[in-house]
Image 1 (tube, helix red, strand yellow):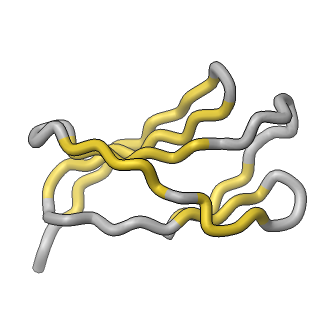
Image 2: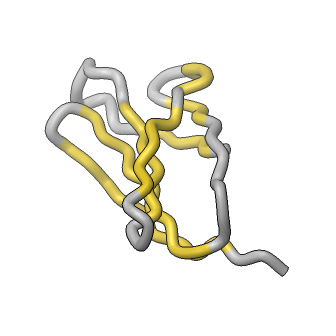
Length: 72
């Protein structure tokens, strides 16, 4: 689950993608709901442990966040 807030600088809806660079896996993550203002909620599923990236795009702007998902 991903909750995020965007600046109100563009009217375009955001798009969210999840990617596992080592396997070339890329999948869109649907925006489940729009909360008040520019707050959004997206839900997706990670298929395996490893290094992942989440990218949030809005118009020509994009931010990517990297993280490692490990099984214990």
